[in-house]
Length: 130
Image 1 (cartoon, rainbow, N blue to C red):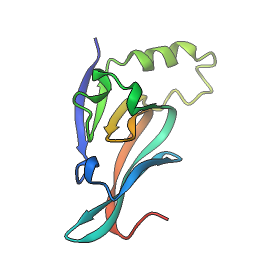
Image 2 (image 1 turned 90 degrees about the vertical axis):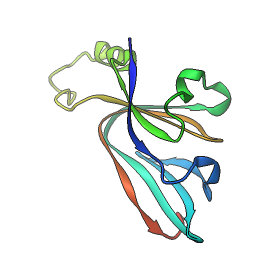
Image 3 (image 1 turned 135 degrees about the vertical axis):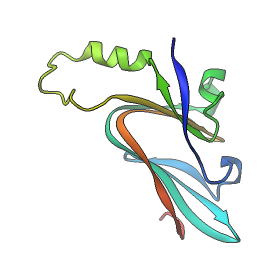
């Protein structure tokens, strides 16, 4: 049975984002206000093997519970097991990379899921994403 482990909380509630979260390549970008100044932040995923996004209207309790504004790692992920079973050339596919299942639910956007080697929070910087 899979379970979720908390890794990171976004700097402000997603209901207060200055700009809606968007996926740009392997980065979830968002804008927010802190002390009356606008900042840009995000989460970068490294060596992404697979990703999927589910609109808010299609999210189940599983996609929201524990993952609302919170990056979690899904342990014992059936999705990783499915991906590993689909690999036919196990020597030349980069299987030496770790495959971790990450998930985050953000208000008004939905649930993002990544199978990637690692992740990192982008430091908040003054300004807005262009």
